[in-house]
Length: 359
Image: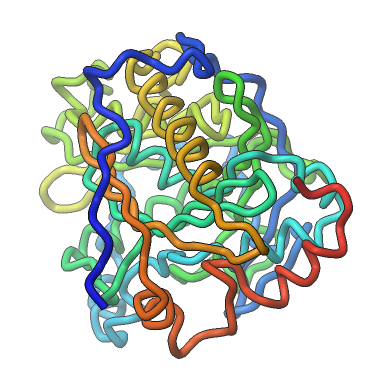
């Protein structure tokens, strides 16, 4: 069966939909739930994997290459971050959390990284399903890919372990698969969205319920070897917008940056207040327009009778194309995994069916 034809549903040159008022303001970020991934197990409403910023923290002269040789001897799959492609963890979170009813009130559900890529215009292929008024977006990754820069991956994570600690000493080693994720409920323009993303660490150890104002993002950027902290601007951090957008989406107020020299030794560091580096409003507006257009298109194209469709979405800088996947393509997309309706696991679908609040 031949694939259906692509349809362009939005261009940057199009007039905004009257149902998507601009500018699209971001409402207050509220942490509605969280989960830890430890030892390949997901723990809902758990702070087990949560890390805390060391205070006082001064990583100057820290060697980010310490232990690198041991790391490079690990199997390749242990030398890269375990990127979540599907939404299964998010579905489990939404159904098992103590705040499940609040999470299920969202109109758009996705990973924070997906909305970040849409806003900054990074090439992105998505699988999208629409069910009872909710748009679900996950990344389409037909092949498992590994980060070729194992050294950079190690050094970045090493910086995180130097600057933060946990209440569980066994988690202080370099383990790229131990993550603490937060679920943020907020509005984007007139849309109620649920974003799930990783948080590097929080301030104030011991707080039972961290909130976005406690989050801290940890980053590294190769410096010039000077010990004086450089001025934080696009000339020193060319990819600064790609740091600001994800922090803004989760409500993270601070980014702590270490600047290692060519030998991997941190020579300076600086704290960036995200509020002082506002992203371009047109990027946020573009993200809102994409979500609005997708939700309207999928709602108008949904078949009667409860059949959950899957659309392949090609989001590019300046436009978005959509086409419906055939039954064969959906079967191929879902082969080898848990049974699904569209991109939604059957077990989650049954649980959603039993919730009168969905829709």
